[in-house]
Length: 266
Ligand code: KIV
Image (spheres, rainbow, N blue to C red):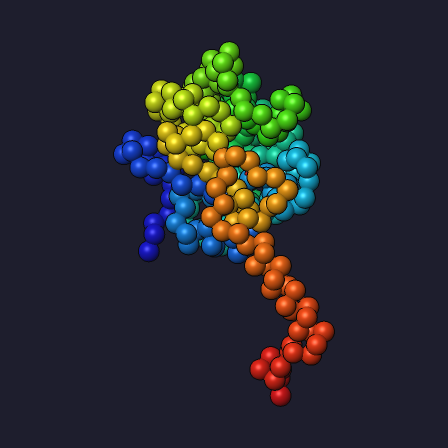
């Protein structure tokens, strides 16, 4: 049986040159499937707001919604390390509130680590939260909660911005993050950051040189047709399968083919 993944295990993977695999999950059945598939890290991402709740951005997601999804994932008893994403405005207004909200994800949700978006600007939060023994995964580059500042979901760190992203990477490591997500940055910059940092880098749209990769489960299964970024690889196309099953069910109920005796009690 697979052993439970811990923070030291994730750190060791970088030291041993083993690639870290991560996917999102937001509920019990997907947490079970993703965990059975063997991922090292499950992120209960605030992407739930887009791919499950149908919002245009992750910004409306609340603490209570995240806690609901974290608890559902934890009930699947995953062997993967479970990281809870901190929603917009849950860690922005001060260290005390950030620590309290991150603590809720661990204490009430059952997560084993939290993720916050931001680099140098969030170093004080990462330092404070890490100092009370809540492991923090940082997230720099294209940070979806900064959609309005960025003017859309645009690749970050091209040309003169590269130095700022490199500074962010060092700032989050120095502040105590145990890992950092690099999203939507040029592959060469991600390779440089990965070589410079001692903590693992987990890439999404950041090329192949990162210490690990993460994608949104709905994207790789073809369950989110709203948008499909260039960095997503679709490993299955489930939407037509689900539609066909629903269409067949509707037809069979209408024409009396379902239920049969097999599905009835005597
Ligand atoms: O919310 C999310 O799913 C994420 C990952 C895609 C990194 O932040």
